[in-house]
Image 1 (cartoon, rainbow, N blue to C red):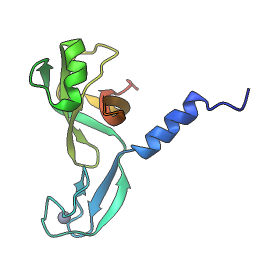
Image 2: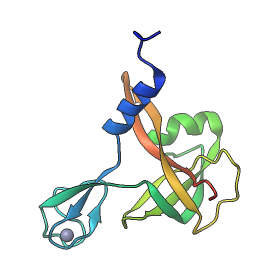
Image 3: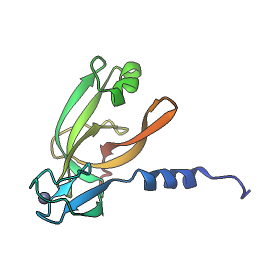
Image 4: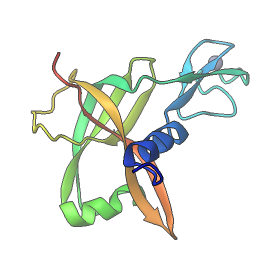
Length: 141
Ligand SMILES: [Zn+2]
């Protein structure tokens, strides 16, 4: 025991590299995610404070993506799974983001449902693995 790299260590490295970094505009205070060169809300601010998103939010709207016509980051999964739910999530910090919903609990998807981000390998292109986030229903507390 000891010399080899454990899987938890590897996962920790990935989640730090691909954590959800956003920018808080120092001009208007809104949170830009993904990061922009110029604030997309006030179109003035170009100085930002980097913040770590919690990954928690609520479903704002949802839809089912069918196999054909999926954007490239979803195409690999679409071709093997057929269709899957995609959600627009309003994060606690304000930004709205679109991502796939993984639903291991098979709960009914509804607007307002609390979700939390999880990091997943999304697709592999020319040997480069792209990571991104998906959402899953937040644990019931
Ligand atoms: Zn701004």
